[in-house]
Amino acid sequence: MKYDAVIIGGGISGATCALVLSHFGCRVAVVEREAHVTPLLHGFVRHGVHHDTGFHYAGGLGPGEILDRFFRFLGLNQGMELYPLRAQGFDRIVDQSTSDVVEFSYGEQSWRDSLLAAFPREAAAINRFQQTVLSICDSLPYLNKEKTFGEDALFANSQDISLQAFVAELTQDRRLQAVLCMHCLLHGTPPDQIPLRLHAAVVGPYCRSVYGIRGGGRQLSQSFAASLQQANVDLYCGSRVTAMSVDPDNNITGVTLSSGQELVAAQVIHAADPRLLLDWLDEKCFRPVYRRRLTALQETQSALILFGQSARPVESLADRNLYLADLHLGTELFSASMAQRPLYLSSAGLELSTDDGVAQRCGIIGIMPEDYRCYEPWQATRRGQRPEEYLRFKHERRGQMLERIEQAAPEVAQALQQPFLATPLTLRDYLHYPQGAMYGVSHQLARYPLQVATRVRGLYLSGQALAAPGLMGAMIGAFYTCGTLLGHQRVAEELRQWQ
Image: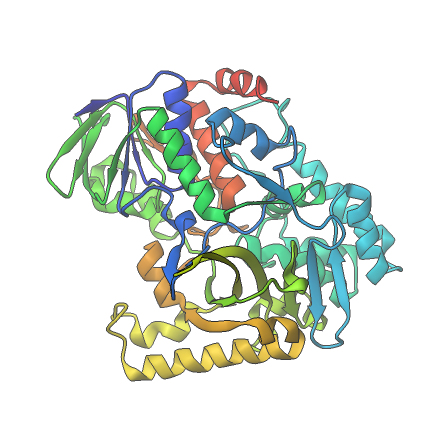
């Protein structure tokens, strides 16, 4: 089959690339190794209940904001219902060392006021943090619809500093430092490694609005699938790429699938782990320095993810999220012990099939950063075949998470039913990153961001590795990649019609 473009990876970024290119008249194919596109968003069923895995809440979905414009441009808003989280305290942090509560609210003034209520002597630090974060957001392409577009890396800035260094300049209050770093959980890179510029792009929109989606990630996944079908994008789900074809002049000519089928295209967008290119292309296609650069890419932190359900809504998680942590650790809280590192709790309405019809239930999810190295003794094993030693270790980890929830959020603990745990090995097996990364390749201060275009003409990169983690980062990366192919101004002008 012959296409204008073949996209490898049917996640958020790959699906977005397909819809953008199709909008501009391209014939597009998407190759996805799982059974359906956007598999992380799709979630799974356990104990008769659907559990959300890939979407919890997002900034930038307010009217006219970046994700709202993306959704409408791509047709994702059809049949989708958004709902605002609590304007006052959409995120609540419980300091386990003092039992004090710190809240984040949205609306720029409310955001500042909620932090000032907990840190009344830190007005200067709080104001400067917000001003800096929003200034960075408003200077970035797509986050600012008037921003001039260029071919440089989206988040490249040779003068950038780490988030840890920035908050240390702002304040000596270790508890406030920890609070300002808490949302590192949204991108999986610790404060000492994440560039301030990228962290700001992820968390800045939460200062202005915070929304959820009725039906969560599954609804968003279904919206992507419906839009791709309407756009006549060919989907090769359950297929894997085994090789890329390149002509003698180093031009991409297509890809070969595990079935032996060849997809011919003059343009290929790789929206998955960039390191896979080393398996699919001949060594001479890339210079040795670029190959070493890909090999050296590191992954974001892995995690322990606790899933459960409740027979009733949990008031403390109604339209808000909880973070449990020992704030006195400051910026070092992400390297703390199991009893101290941040634990994120959220819930969503789920449907449970019954003989009498459909009963509404509440799903509960808990996420805690975890070091993959703890699981290296069992890294040669696969799900369903783990040894008893691993199962005992997993059971202990689950017990430690439940104990923390019981101590700091007793209402959640009392409501939680049938809890089960996913470990970094689970994430590795389902997300296909060797060290179970939550958000794929890590963006670190010492490493210059990858570029869209590669030395192989017609081969482009997209996805979270290019821009930033999460829904917004994946979609910005996709639009930026398509702008490189089609012309940034052309894409930007079309997108402005949806503001």
